[in-house]
Image (cartoon, rainbow, N blue to C red; front, side):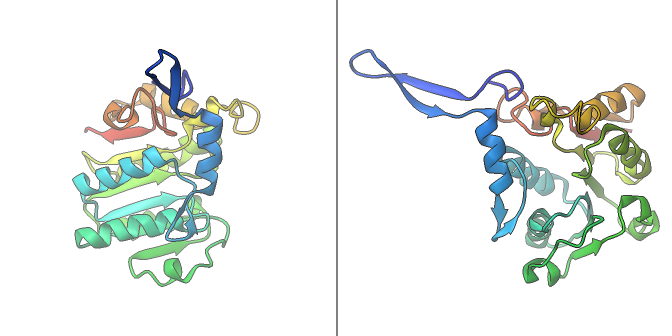
Length: 224
């Protein structure tokens, strides 16, 4: 089963020998649903598989700081903030260029800091007091910009932690070459070829089946 190679299908033989479909969906349906996904009523724009992955990663890693590139309405920042609050500590720095966060739940969450001048203007000194840092890039998705963001933030990612590049799945949706000039998947592949400090952690990209994620080759774990 793979989001990159085939639609989801599941079937079972009925008593008369006829095949009855019990579970059937495809990438287009999952993509549509991910655009409508919310957390505590706030738009989140995350695939359900990756939402589950994230709570397991955060629980295992227990980061002091999660840097999120791409805030949108703030649903994912709120999700991460709640995860860290339930674990006892941790802060979210969520970065965007637009001021789209209106929900009071996000604006009043004590462990969320919002930055509105883009990742290029984020001062890395603001994360110098944190020991275990994780970065999630859900920004522009243009391949060259994904690479540039990685070059800026890779040094703050703790050994054993993650730099996660989201939405490489757009290559399967056939929009990466025209709109995103290769997209996140191309950026991930180039990064993995250029460094031995990060490896592709298939534990998460294959958790629900081979590449059953919107972040194929995007779960980059720092190993040295």
